[in-house]
Amino acid sequence: MLRPFGLTKLQAELYELTHRGNPGDRAFYAKSCAKAARVLELGTGYGRLIPGLSRSAAEIWGLERDAQLLAAARRVVRQLGPAQRRKVRLVGGDMRDFDLESKFDRIILPYNGLCCLLNRRDILRCFKCVKRHLAPGGEFIFDVWAADRFYRDARASAYRDEPGPILSIVHRSQIWDVFEKSRLRSRSQRLDVTYTYVSRERGTQVTIPIAQRYLPSSELMALVARADLQVKAIYGDFEMHRFGRNSPYLVIRTL
Image (cartoon, rainbow, N blue to C red; front, top):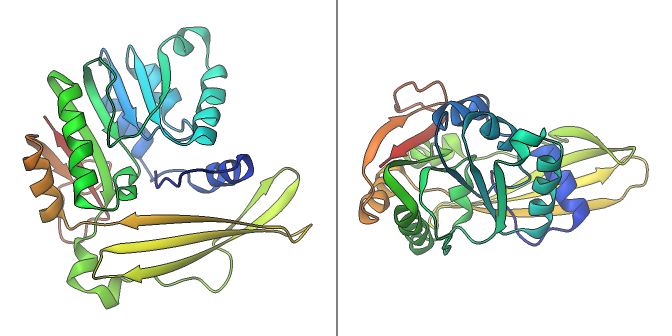
């Protein structure tokens, strides 16, 4: 998921209610990790994928650097049944620089998590850490929003802010309207989004800025190669259709 850092407890709770993943990604990752001995999820966030992963694999590790999101993930684990709960280990850490002293059959980075790394050097650092932690025959699987269309025609695919709220959520017995404002910087491949939550009852406002970096598929593939990872498959969605010019997502499996 797109991940901010240094959230307050209220921000983390509002973030969790807003960012629920992409259609089909839960089932895709659960299936991709089925029967794996050990799985590492980078940027595990509030634990959105943990219930499904813990039914699929023998052992699950989740790495997350935001303290409030990590606390939310721990609450998710506590709600699991005893057998599933024993499979999960959550650790604080940075996906750019981690050393878990373990090897993994699957390492996953879902829901545009890679986009929170804002330069190529950090992406490469992440990929190299992944490479060091892959067990023989293991796979690294990640997905990002497909940015190729954006670079082919920036005017046609640029984000346009909705004039009103993009959704409304209920939290702490209040209704919060959620507004999204985007700032596009094509030259630096940046799309910075600010989510503003406004309580209807109290007028309270909470903002969460999320900086994002989107690379064209060709640049991303070059970084994969530089990390000595080999592409096994590329999909355009979570039903594993072939990646093409109009694919909404870029889903990559590497060895």
